Length: 163
Image (cartoon, rainbow, N blue to C red; front, side, top):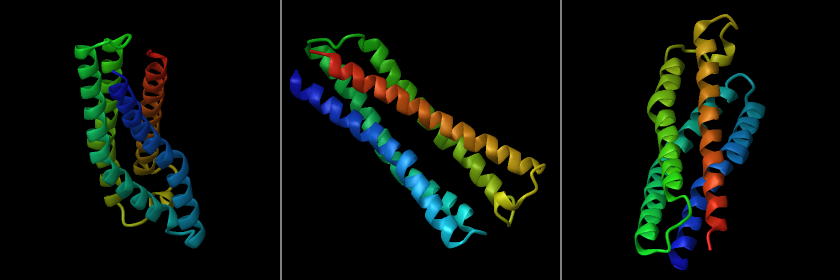
């Protein structure tokens, strides 16, 4: 049914587009602005601001993911069945799992590291294990988001190929 396919595309566009705007537009702008305003503490404040924005977007991610999954199941039940529906459902589950790993594993560890020191992470010595762990976790967070984006773009592409 065309209406459900369009709804699927809209949901995926909101999900993937939201992540892309946060990662490629909001984060760089927040960091650049706050670091320019206060070189000493701006980076730490930007990290907290962006973390709060990501946490605020989390309920939307879960809702959009559940909606995308549900729409795909309904479309497969009432027909015509989307191509490679099991792969698509798996991609949605993967996207949600990657998001969950970031939200429930990486972000709490980053927050704990930030709270373990009174000064900003950037001011710690390069050989400080907390700074190294923070950098590793930040990199992991970025990879998880990029993988989620890639899977979402693949789903959008698959949706545009259905007839």
